[in-house]
Image 1: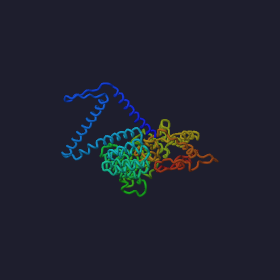
Image 2: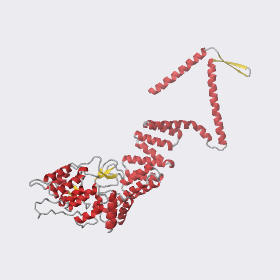
Image 3: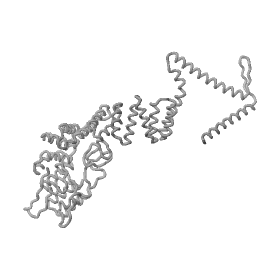
Image 4: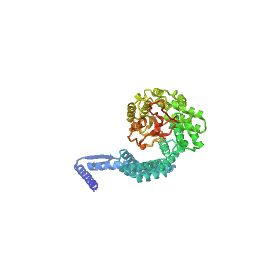
Amino acid sequence: MLWSLLKILVFVAIVAVLAFGAALLTETAGGVQITVAGTEYTLSALQSVIALAILVFAVWVLFKLLSLLLATLRFLNGDETAISRYFDKGRERKGYQALSDGLMALASGEGRLAMAKAARAEKYLEKPELTDLLTAQAAELAGDTKKAAEAYKRLVSNQSTRFVGVRGIMKQKLSEGDTDTARQLAEKALSLRPKHEEVQDTLLTLQARAQDWAGARKTLSTKLKTGTLPRDVYKRRDAVLALSASKAIVEEGATVEQQEQAIEANRLSPDLVPAAAMAARAYLARDKKRYAIRVLKKAWEAQPHPDLAHAFAEVEPTETAQERVKRFAQLSRLAPQHDETRLVMAELHIVAEDFPEARRALGDLVEREPDARALTLMAAIEKGEGASDAVIQGWLARALNAPRGPQWVCGNCNHIHAEWAPVCENCASFDTLSWRRPEAPEVVGATGAQVLPLITGTPEGAAGPDASDIPEVELLDGDDTSASDMGETLPEASDTDDEKPKTQSVK
């Protein structure tokens, strides 16, 4: 209502100004004299202004007629669209102006205005491949997902804009959480535009989430062929996918194909710890100990890890504690100063009841990088050497508030995982887990308190720890064993030589 009133007022003001100007020209003396073919014409001031306006209009009409004449000549010479283009120039100019205004509105975050400009551009241009895209993006910005979906579907129906439409619907499904449909759309988009890096990454992530390892490896190969992934990164991630496909190797009844995939994963990336452990177990299942040892040694040299030690222990499951210490010396020589080497050898010497050697193996680790595992092993060494309960309790008190040490940590979100996985369970990123100490160490709040009575013995009349609260401790056989079982590996203090401490070798 106010806008209409404003337009009326502006119109009245313009008419008033023109009337006032005409009155002034009428009262003005003098004019213009024009001589044509000996005839003299005298025009007053008002007549001169009117004549000038008529002349300008006549020149404009003349140029338009000339343009129409040229278009007609081009049409007669075979250009069938010449005349139609002549009449469409004005519409195109208005349409492209509306399209430009819509893009500016979209860039400035004005979704509703951009939608209005897109509708105006469509009216003049009749080019849906341009205006539908603007409409879809403007509708998304304005929160109208239904209208955006309709625009994307119209884009899909056009051969030249099909990829844009499929990709737009894919993004909508991702925002809605419909990952299955989004994965199918990503596969379709990749078939339309194989070199599109964003679609490649999206499809790879969705396939990894859905555990479609075969499809993910195919997508990874596409990234390599199109040059969007370096070859060294490709080998690493292909190994991760091959390893993920062979996860059932740790279960009974693993197929030959799964064993082959585990071995292939290790071949593609020898330093990938889970792949090396699985490949070693695959070789052991085929009674090829020599190959298993070679795989584990190569991986240990690249990165010592408890899983590799567990797999190495499975090579000779029936050996004695002393034989195991001797055999593990092969690994310790590959990385003698690594913390994991020190911890493993210390544990083996404890099991073999060689406590001075266990202390030497542990070295300064309890002071330099103290964690719950190192401090608990130190408590076991003190126990085996007959130290007082106060000394043992002192070590376990330190273990109570010590961090757990290296763990599988996501490099994207720093989420800590209990075991390796190809996809982070927190942020769903692919191949981001690495074995390292967390930036914000996770403190083991109950380890020391719960292991303490198992090593020192529960005072008479005191209640022992609840079995449900006892943490799990990793032993070299790769099994998860509760701390109550660990008590069997720690020698009980004895006052007489007849009661010699007994231990069980870790198998």
